[in-house]
Figure 1: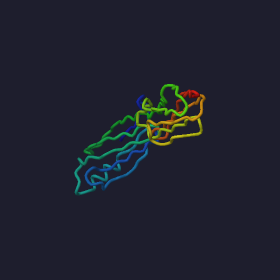
Figure 2: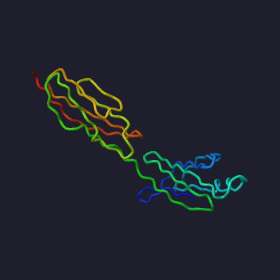
Figure 3: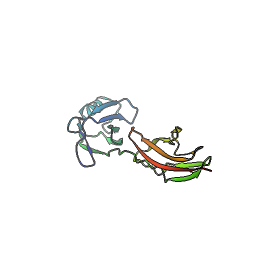
Figure 4: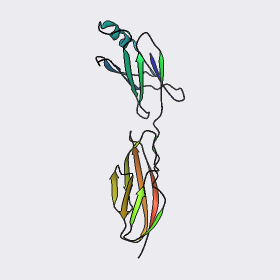
Length: 178
């Protein structure tokens, strides 16, 4: 049996566990934990015992996943009936950081840097809204923009992590009339 818990020790129901043998991949199945965070290994053990080319010590690779948590990996020797517990760590939302406010003159390039943004699993999108109807959507941590009119502009950086969680931060650009 395998029990999947969070970092507080609470069971995680409906987590997906992919179990496959590491020798040649002849066994590859997905299981789902029950309401108490358990999945039964009996099927895996019986399968290994019926194969004449395998020993009872065949290592198996486990991949455990559930939306909102970081994916966990484990290798288990299937030598006997085992009870193991695997802890999944919550996948925290990202924290956006658009940088400090800036002051420039008209037609002067402004450099933006989102490298102060953080996430425990990685940021995949940096979407910049420059506040003047112009945007930079994509994977650019840094970018630049030129304002042609004087004024105060609110720049918004929206960051998205590997599972679609997002956060945004704003900064001001003060553009002086020259």
